[in-house]
Length: 135
Image (cartoon, rainbow, N blue to C red; front, side, top):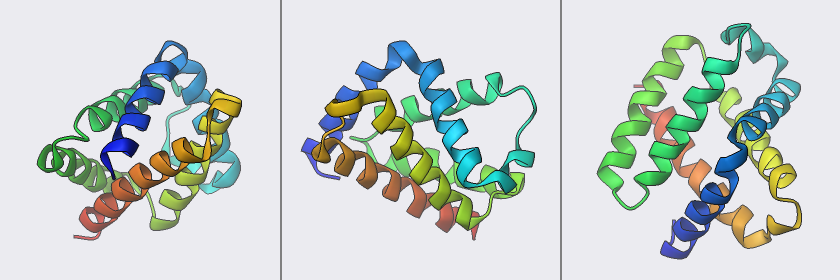
C-alpha cells in the first residue's frame, strides 16, 4: 500500500467508527448472502463476532505503518480462521462483502481512490492470512 492509500483507509475508518455496529451488520449481511455456506462457522449471536471484526480491523489499520506487526497480527488471524474452518473461497467472498458494505456506508464518498485503498489493504491481508492458513 502506498502512504496515500494508508491515509485514505485510516481517514475512512475514523469516519466510519461512530456507526461501527451498523457497518458490521452490513459486512456480515453481504458475506452471508455471498457465501451462505459460511454461516455455520459463526454462532447464532453475531454481536461478539461483530465486536471481534471491528477490534481486529482497528488493530490492523493501526499497524499499517508497521509491517512486521501488521504481518504478525494477520498471520495469527489466518491460523485461527483455518482452525475455525474458513476456506480460501471465503476470503474472496469476504472481500466482496467488505467492499459492498463500505460502498453502502459511504455512498458517494466511497470514491475510486478510497475503494482502491481498501482493496489494496484487503488483498494484503488476504495474502498473509492464506499463506499462514496453508502453513
